[in-house]
Length: 482
Image (cartoon, rainbow, N blue to C red; front, side, top):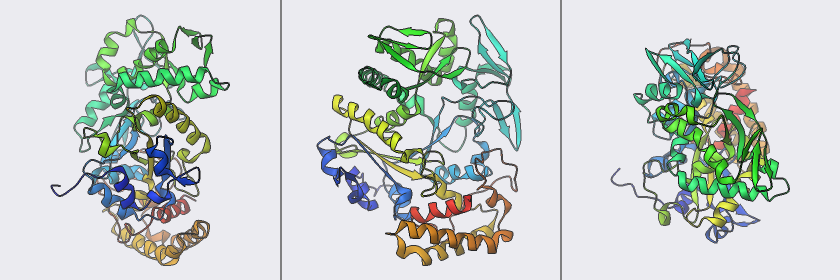
């Protein structure tokens, strides 16, 4: 560690070999970043020919940089034990120091039929050794806490439960359980809330600016996506500007600042759950909820990719703030078959619109560059409990590299050839692969998968894994997903 030298954003991107690929209006993005003309740009590593090993080495040799791996508050025990199926990619990333778990907490408890709420991390339950224990769920009814059924989902930060003889916030149950695990968990609402003053000013300006636009209702959705109630319900609701005031459902706010103050309450419920519940009888019954779109930008603004460092702007965020981020299946996908929501034109347009205002009005904030890293590449790393998988995947990686390394500049051709090679290999070796590995590629597979073959495992990087490009590895995953 003593020989590691802090790298500037330009040095990080140059070492990866992607700086010259950043474009802005057909020109180099670097000049536009330096002039603050470009407020937001992004690169999806899954579409590049950068070797996986090159990025991992960059992270390990850059003491200031640790990309967040965003997951959800809830049950991580099986992930940490290496027995969570597809979700093992979290373990592979976090246990080896390639990233850290940054947990999104504005989720909902799962319903009895597992059709609604967070059915992946199941925050309304405790999962231990293949057994799921449903927790009793209590929310405020205006005069006291009432036990709720499980036919509906409830906003996780506003729920209390009985656990080990305590009547305790549900958020705190999971925080306590995660505190003693091998990963250093952080909570996204808390790291954003640490810079409450800045975030409130930014959000207030964004809302006031949106209110002046012709399509204000759609722009508001990028900032405030839902309304939550003290009894734990969460609804899609439009924010509407009426003169200088705002209305969400039947709730009126006299100003943008009053609206933003109410929107901070869910953040406090995560950051200071005991204090929130002690004062719950003084809280408004309805609150606006900051959108996932805005949270992604705020997470970058507060430099969640530099979690253990005091940020020195001149060397760490200029001419752009390099927000390296491990994205899972929904966010980063596995291009070209599934590119994730980050790649949609509407999302990029929303991110850019938000950043344009921030960079224009806040000289203390630097332009944002999203470096999106697809976490699913680690689904190609088997466990140490299945050595035969390791051998067979080594063979696959060799075949893919021999057959497609020369096609890096022809992604369409490469995708066809990678799929052909992968499916041929799968046809030959499917009976020799572990069912545990095969089950990873069942769509929407969460921690409650049924195939358990071991009590504990470590992720193994097969020979040749680091020599694969992100492009090749995402194509392999896409082929296995069918």
